Length: 593
Image (cartoon, rainbow, N blue to C red; front, side, top):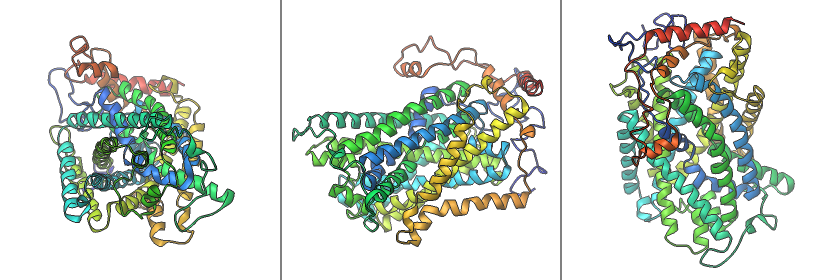
């Protein structure tokens, strides 16, 4: 056998032809099987942890700092329009991913779905795309952390202190992710809670100051939206088109910011394999995505456009690099300084630090789990499958922790330059993820129709399908092609590769894997809609009490209802007969029509 497994070596996790998954290493001689999954990951994440992890992955530096670039290039009107449209389209993608993930909450989430229902080569391509996407976001967040912390002292931006900060953050990420997943979930719960406090604090700041509650007594209201300031002509210091074309390009500039900022469903899909009650907790997490898009992203775009003038000198310096990486890079902090507000900017920057740290922590977790899922499917070396007794893929952890070292580029250049470079590089990778999610759902929908599976019987039923998937696919593909168009005006080789590296090189992974392994497109009538579902169904049957809601779990933190609620009570093992019965029931449902 080689370091990459193949069908000749051993069956992959996606192969259901072997009957119920073998648990040869996890046999309980008393009741049955002790494994929670068809692999070595363990389901320890509760409802409140998953909800906050979903927020932690979707809200990071971009919503508080990088959003300023979209505001400057397009104005508040274009920014709100871009964030609104992108949020609506991504909600359509979420509608697709939610249906597949709640029914099949497997390790690797949407990545393994793509390889299982579309083409193994597509799973290979999107798996490595998502890995590099997540892994490169880690140094992005660390560089942003070093930038924001220099707000309190310019000396921190010097090479020596910057290197020390980077080492400290990397060490913290390593410590949290080396422990059991429950420790990660608890840490992310509290860190993400800080994000929620921050965003609502900024909403409160915007409302109070716009009606006159500021040191200047200036009730500025929607002043930044008047006198032609809402829809500005695009400007990047070099290319400055005029008229309607300029305003349209201003929208594209704001859309580029929205594409990088508005994210979410992919993180829930990845964390599903370690959810304690996946059928309930993951379903609830996907449902709240729609509210998060509306409140955090659309609301955030509205608030920042009200509070901060789009073409103020301080914001221009941050966006175009004239400030050489001033730590007051957040447009909210700029607005506070313009109004003469003190103390609150320090509090906001402190909370932004926790937001940045939390996002980087989530990216580290997702990169590790993604690499592990690739190894399960034979798309990465087999030795990466090894997990510690606490369910941590230790060798995957070691590989991922190499990528944060890239954040040391902030030592030789500046943190602001590093942030711009990393954000441009990974934006294309995020769009590829969404394109593959839509393609996968279209094939899944066709398979359900061909095999007579009633989708209304699934834990989550996606409405307006498959039209949401088709529209999402068309939109994401179009944006992936055009968002870096300013590369050509004038031509810039470095900008071209920072914007289009992922689009140029990732599709070749599909071609190479398909040619080498001679994979075939999965036919709708042959798609395996049984897969690991019986194992997960049997696992859900081990619980003796109904699931606990989010707010009840929150109450448990302070001792409310702790003795009464026993949602985590379960049999010590999975009954093998439950797996067999669930598989037989699923197969009967597929062949009865």
